Length: 424
Ligand code: DLL
Image (tube, helix red, strand yellow):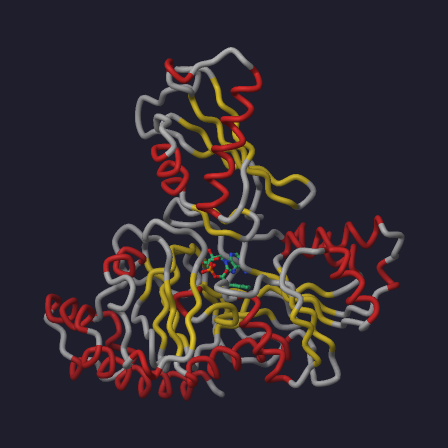
């Protein structure tokens, strides 16, 4: 669709979406009222800047049902983010919303060369995480044979991949790399498998990692982006040009803003990505601040698609990290330390070794916790690591260190050392 027609379509959808949200979500209505903006003031995309922003804090405030825009009985599904302590986001879907989401994922699969002739192996996690269900639904829509593997059990992944001749692999880039290494260790060469493409996302990855994975698996590796708040994966995806991800603009309107001032920035400038879902029914967020830092471009793409492209996320405007595909806030780790009776003197160290994330948490003992039996310390470390694993869903290595041994900062405490070079 030519760009002008897309804009007309977006304007049409936005005006009715704003009315829908205003009429059914009292929380957003009061935000609009506070800003002095009424649904009739929004006549099209040109007016979108008049609307208030939403952020994770608003979702926390309204947990669990406050953002719902339809009766609960119209909803058929929820999905949710990892993490607890009020950071968990619950997304609701009507059947229409599920269809729309799966359609977006189907487009990603087709853009990666998928068709009904393909065998799509989905090893994103199934369950509350959106990765598995999203790509699973997209693959069904395309008519491909879908292998609902979920993540883990790599030996079984490899067995199915080889026996059923999987042609498209969907998982996080770290897991793709791990599968590639495991194939190699099992004696397979890249040309031995039947894969032609991979659709990888949910965490930052570099061009270098792309080349590694492509070489290891003998495939073309495509990026896919999304977040639970907007449905899940499929908000944007790469085409054969592998030069930015096309945003499904007929369903999601994208803006780039200055994260400090909230001012909109022109195409080509780096800033925070903001999404408005134009036709979701149950959980239709308007001007949702993703905290992902990106650049948008409307330059013509060689694939012929006219949808705007986003760069790979280049960082975050908050302190969220993605470790082994799981969203982690330092405050979640701190909450566990306090609950387990430790002082909040800690350091989180994240690294990426052989394309796989490592998480080490250094925690100071209180003087009264100090014990000189090695066994005692090891048991305490194990217990704390278990409590953090329960909170995050991924396990750290905990190092209990002597009281006052973690360097104090004179300004803002430095809690995180991220040694991964995630952005090119
Ligand atoms: O990660 C949805 C998803 C599943 C996307 C499968 C792609 C594939 P959340 O758990 O809510 O949703 O995490 C969303 O992950 O704000 C980004 O910071 C990050 N993220 C997602 N895709 C990419 C990507 C899913 N391709 C958060 N590159 C987002 C870099 C990504 N970061």
